[in-house]
Picture 1 (cartoon, rainbow over the protein chains, first blue to last red):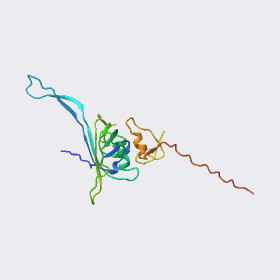
Picture 2 (cartoon, rainbow over the protein chains, first blue to last red; picture 1 turned 135 degrees about the vertical axis):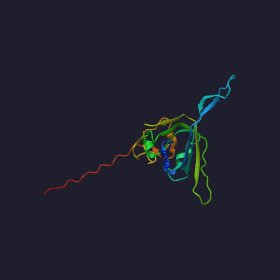
Picture 3 (cartoon, each protein chain N blue to C red; picture 1 turned 180 degrees about the vertical axis):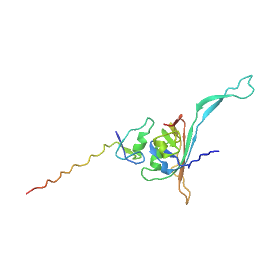
Picture 4 (cartoon, rainbow over the protein chains, first blue to last red; picture 1 turned 45 degrees about the horizontal axis):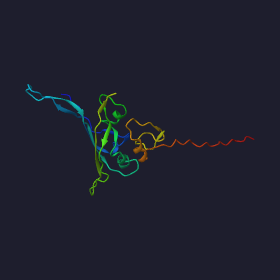
Length: 139
Length: 52
């Protein structure tokens, strides 16, 4: 059986800022809420599609240098911004069927941890962007 | 008109056209873009060689 694997090395833009070289983890959770529509006479539960409830979580190295993580993220808390992710850097610029680009065009960032430090380790921050419809571009 | 300052946005010095949901104020506050017009290169008069 043929298999295909890829090296996890996604590219990411948050509010048009390319933070790929600070990112170590990213997860897109594409959700369409299930609304129960079971009625009398049914013999099993049934569901129908509700609203999308999407989420992107990312882990970034923290950096306080100019144009780096803290400068790019701090002012976004409490606002809705665009976040773009692709499995490859090329897919971010020119998406294709094998390198799609996923976008939440108005995702809300509720919180940020400006300091998340432990002695002897590189500081990282975890961000959760939620809301907005997910789009997948392949061209 | 916005000008790109940081290479994280694009090529510094080029115009930045924000997408619909871009938080432009956050980019300005972070110094990633500016509202300044690109500076023109100063003109230097070339010396004319005198021929005897």
